[in-house]
Length: 178
Image (cartoon, rainbow, N blue to C red):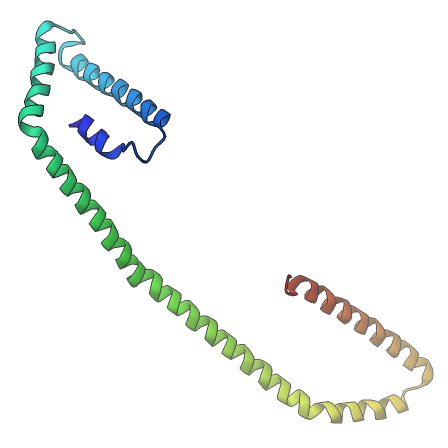
């Protein structure tokens, strides 16, 4: 049974010959170790003539009566396993991954909509208040003494340079790569 199962899963067409030979050698070494371990558990590893007869008769019995039945059962089990895996994969795809994907798209759309609304709400008052604020600022500027104006203007220039540098850094990080 082990040899038939091994040969069913170790198809020669899909592998290189040297990998197939290595697999064969490792399989038969493992089979020998398993048989020796079973012999060790049953009669302390003593190999007698009746043990050889039992192994040969067991192999002949399997080949004559059970092999065809076992290969059919093995094929049905393989087909059942493959079908079960495909059904589970589709079920997970449709019940878990697709809804999560859809929810992520909806969440992205809602967040985009929210931030657009926030920016629009903040932008409208700025548009409305910009001209009056500029007018007020110009009137205040006329009242400020010249020596204080120098310090305020130098501070505003510094702030403007910092903001421009930050905008340049932001653009260089998030600019479209070509």
